[in-house]
Image 1 (cartoon, one colour):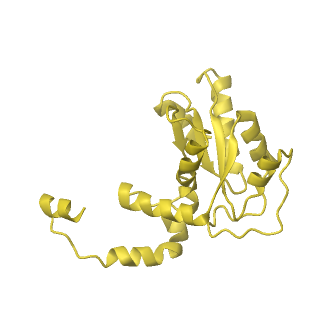
Image 2: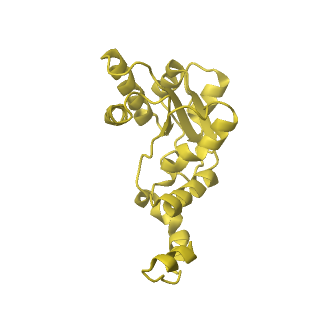
Length: 193
């Protein structure tokens, strides 16, 4: 819930949409509860729509949402490479948060998260765990489907540092480490970019 408070204080107010990676659903639900408490206290005027992002290789919440179910069924197995999302269960509290907020559940392929993890590292200097890159990886599909509009304030929660699953990016890190050094000179750096 702390993140909800911090986000509302810095924007100011609530975002229109919160996109969050979801495994078991506790962090996702805590974010929703935080916004509900802020609204109840009169700190924010409206509640965000909550978007739960899961791997399509471990989609218990996604399947329940798409089926219009009232509860999340535990899957026989989960096969995602994203350790933070590789669960065969998601609590009913997460499904309730999606529905109560007017949000959705979205699915991404594991490779989309790895691609976004790499982009964040190279383009923004932010090293997140693969599961944490899932919300950003889901954005293009959410925009294309009209689930999120370009004029809305969207917050994507980056939930964990990249060191959690560092072994998944060893080859990428090794390749980056093999590049020739660049002189500490503006023109030289620009030429490398």
